[in-house]
Length: 289
Ligand code: 5RP
Image 1 (cartoon, rainbow, N blue to C red):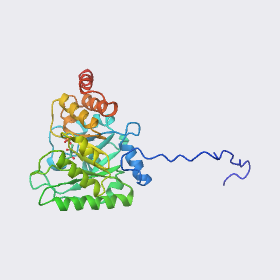
Image 2 (image 1 turned 60 degrees about the vertical axis):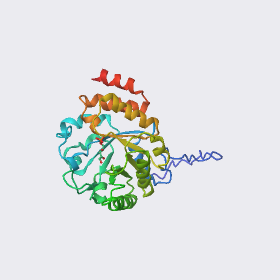
Image 3 (image 1 turned 90 degrees about the vertical axis):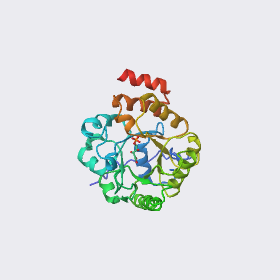
Image 4 (image 1 turned 30 degrees about the vertical axis):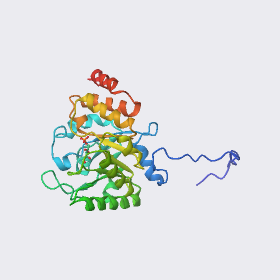
């Protein structure tokens, strides 16, 4: 029963003070619904606008590649340093502690492996993403691939519809077209196509001229790390991407295949969130080692 006595009259109405109506801090996201913004805020730190996503979804097409043979032994110790976890639902349910309290970008397409033709994929039921409390879902698009481009763009389009219905943002993941030059023109086109089809985040690859890729993509871009590089080079890659306007990294092999993955993810985080120069971040990596 609500109290009926001592009801205090409101008196601080702030008459004459305009109600705060700040824009949302992420590029292209101001017109999204509250749930979408809430989820994006879990992924991208509102203080910096950036994110270090730890990708360990590789097994869904590659199997137990180096560094993800035993997620519990190699990835779990890194979770505390990541802003967001990117993985497939099987690994999430089986191995990621639900007590981690980290946002998850759920790999939401499935259907092919490296043993066959890639990207004839379907998108998982959005209700499963809801059950898993995903903060975003990730869907691959194969721009420029004759046999799968249309199918994968349709996957993205349908995933965006499904995500909009439940307030879950979609990350478009640009696959590298076999026959296309991996340059700013290609990644700019692929990123823009993802955004035009409704992706709320785009994941692509760093390349020379990346500032143009970022400038003409209306939503935040994060970069994949790609194949394992020496640590200093991987930190330089992250640095150049951030300086070109990327909103973060979604890095896997350059973290979990490092000799010292925990030191590496902390150094990457310093580059992403603190604009630390690569040489200083490399020093940090060596000190943490
Ligand atoms: C592939 C992916 C991977 O998660 C992505 O490539 C990130 O991992 P890495 O930094 O090892 O490239 O989305 O589609």
